[in-house]
Length: 134
Image (cartoon, rainbow, N blue to C red; front, side, top):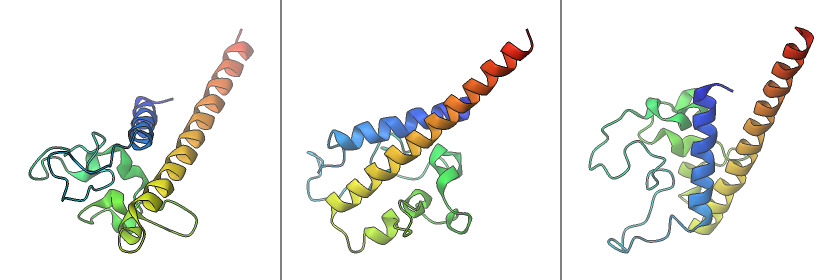
């Protein structure tokens, strides 16, 4: 598995762990301010910055953003989380935070599983090639 894919897998696992531990609950410092999925996580390259310092296309999550949404203000909020095309951007308008976080957890688990399966297949292929070459 390439370094970028390994980094992506670790990033997704971190985000899932963060979510499962209630990471998007209200901030103690700013309880009146709602939190933003992905943006209020260490996953975001601009986390803690007052202004966007890093372009979003440098983020590992950018690979999941549809082509027509890559120039949006918050591209990661346009990642399709399910087969219906639910995104953080769309769901933010109607769903409650719990439902949105559950949809994100489901997407994260499925994406992690898919990447791990790809990693296993690549490892098995590499092992078979090494065996064949001996």
